[in-house]
Image (tube, rainbow, N blue to C red; front, side, top):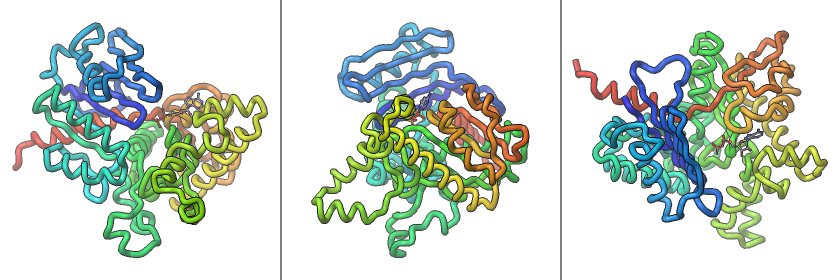
Length: 408
Ligand code: ADP
């Protein structure tokens, strides 16, 4: 089965082609074609790589988002990075959809009714869901009636206990869909399954705290494969400090800004999504690499930004351990989690009470899917490479297998 995964974000569009021959298990495979568009610069930067090692990279003519994505996908069957002989060889397209709202949590086959319903829940995550709907339209245009599957980043957290998913506001909020949904669920779920696999432990007897630290950051408390709590909530703004988002702040600040500074909803949205977090405090950047470089040069605001980031991370991990009643494994994943020994060691410094201690030598290397805890520690600390696309491909495979199974 050739599974094309489209992972559309507000600042990048990642795509991967997987070839799945039998029930997926074990190590995640390499994808046979990979494309990425980075929208953050003046012109979109497109890079494409095939499994044979052919690649192309460079700025694309900015002829509109849709047409840049179309040209990238066409390189699946034309030019030097060609991986299949034509669009008809794609069996299914999987889409990461950030917000499923109250209605969607399980992966679902797209029909026009489902697309309309996803459009409706776009009010919850306007930037993301718009890009995803566009990706679905492009796939239909290029690939015709190929089955398409939506996999929701909120899905894994759907079964959190009501005490974790309900805001203690008016009860009516629940009826309006104002509740804690949680995000990064595709990767939190992947990491919990991968942890059980790497530790050779029964996934139904594990309490794991997963730290997804990328541009967006969230934690999940996972017990026996089920999400018990997570730091993001109604939107991906709640919880930890992030690159350009503050994480949780006193909601009184927002009403103060509205009342006394006369800021509009749009202006507050911009502050919370683009002008806060590491960037807001340091005034330098939302990228942890730039913050660490500035800390080395003794920049005081960068140091404060780093210290808040670590403080809030420790607070969050402590809370998650309390929710789980203990911890059997701690996991670091995504850009910062996988690549920053300094972040990992600073966070773990205070977690000795929970049986967590790093082997500093292992931590300093760029470990991938490895245990970096000290021999004397009772709790393994794993660094796991985020594999959202592979998780989506697996869900597509599973869904199509179920659909094709004869009803007995
Ligand atoms: P996204 O959340 O957009 O999927 P990623 O998971 O790829 O992003 O994480 C991107 C972030 O990872 C960057 O903004 C940067 O802060 C961080 N990062 C990447 N490499 C390193 C590194 N070597 N050290 C510290 N942080 C890093």
